[in-house]
Structures are given as C-alpha cells and as structure tokens.
Amino acid sequence: MGNQTSFQIFVESRRKKVETIEKAHTNCRIIDLTSKATEPWVKFSPFYPHGDIPVPFSAPLTAQSVEGIWQGLKVFETAVIDPTKFDITAMKGLKRTVRRFGPVLGHQKGINSETLLDYLTARQQIYLPSYQWVLQNRLQNELIKLKKIAESHTLVFLDYETNEDILDLKRPLSHAGLVKKYLIHDTILPTIK
Image (tube, rainbow, N blue to C red; front, top):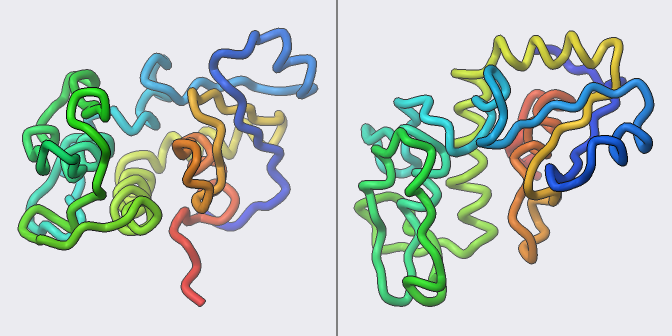
C-alpha cells in the first residue's frame, strides 16, 4: 500500500452528533466503520462475515468473522471456548458476556491448547493478527478508496470504541483505530524489538 504519514485521520465516537464532529474537524469526511454502517464501510466491522479467516493457533480451522474468533476463544469462569461462534454469519449472536458466564479467565491459545492467554497477549496474538489478515486479504480495495479520500479530506472514522492504544486494557480496542494505524503504517501488528 505504501507509507503515507501525511494523512489526517481521527477516530470519534459514533454516539457523537455529526455537527459536533464537523465543528472539530474542518474539511472532513465522516465514515462509519461499525456494524451499523453501509456498504462498503460495514466490511471493516469485526462482526462482518468475510469468511475463511484463519483461526490463530488452530490451522487449518477458519472463521467467518474476527469477532467470532475473539468470542469463540474466550474462556470464562463457567464456560470454555465456543467454536460455534466461528461459523456465525449474521453479525449478531456473537457476544459472550460476563453477566452470563462470570469473569473472563483469558483466551485459549487455539482450539486444541490448554494455554490461556492474558488480555494483552490475546489482543496481540489473536485479535490483531486476525484483523490484519482481513485488512490484507479482504479490504484492499476499500483501503485504497480511503487513501484516495484522505488525499483531499480529513478522515474521521466512527466507532463505538475510541481507544487506539493496544496497551490500554481498561477500555475495549477501537477497530477504527486499527484501520487508521494500518493506513499510516501498513500494519497493525506490534513491532518486535
């Protein structure tokens, strides 16, 4: 895709008023990247069923969506992994909640492992590689369109979550923030030092 750091890209809450966002960002193009967005931008939602997404540490197993992988490998106090989440294409019925299953113990390192990954490690080894795979293998045309728009407009991505810091474990990660990072750096994976 080529490195371009001159882009002006911001992530804002989908719950904010459009007028407020437009006042804060002149000459902006607001693009909703949530599961409520329209085509083609809805494809950036982790809930979107792209299909054939490799499940980390589980080859040759694949899943329909990134969210299906994330939820399917989650282990709770009263529930083990749920590989049925890998097959959901409806963009709903994916979430597994603390309210229902008790505290999250971690994410299982693949379907045949007994190793539980902590939240940060799971983000780095399950969520990010799965989402990066989608960006590289399913969304190249859409990313090119975004770069084209960014040549003449400030991009403002809407997401329900606005946390762009992978290391901030207090808040869920913004996938729109990952799109922003990918557009600027051509990767969302952490740099190994």
